[in-house]
Image (cartoon, rainbow, N blue to C red):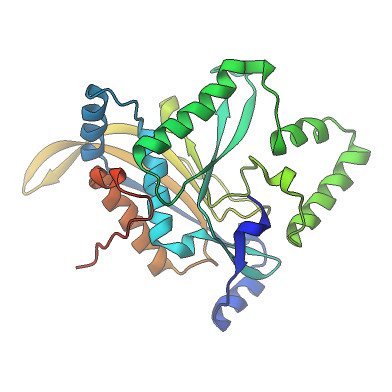
Length: 284
């Protein structure tokens, strides 16, 4: 994602002062960890698998997050060089391992979520991109940021350290070459990591003072949970989300309403069959 896909946003004086008080993204890192009832989603995915679809929970979570961003555009903002910007498209980024072992290579991937994206089209898009790198394994020819990392990372300290400093300075001024932003985790609307696939619960993962991503979401394992309702106990499917976000892009009220929308989408998975940019109203 290049700077050609962003625009400058005018903000209130109070918001600008907050940026001046906390000029670095990590200074404004806010954490939230909460569980979501995904019973309906589990039933929906299982039903679709019986119908021959190859959807996964990760595919559903990515699209649900993208739909939330389309409906809550402040989530698509970021602060750079003490100015507020907004992405004009939605791109979700994550890391994929070439093989499932400790020593396997990891590659960064950007997945653009088009306005007309549905769970079916997104599932195919993610699966094809991940399978492409895993089928090639170590023969994969990296490009963009993945290629640059392999080259720069092997340079001696005397060259590498000042070069990284130059790259960070270019990022600050919005003149980083597009080739270094391609498939770069940090140049996206949001970062996600699916540690639930490793049978782990959600974690907090810090944001970075680099790039254009203002949030990081760690998705935990879906587990059975006993809850009480109307004086009776019942077992639901629950998934914990560890979310870090830059508090400078929106206030707490906006962020909580955004999370409620994400929760609503996951509780009503049929919404994933609609366009990613479909307007969703949950206020009564």
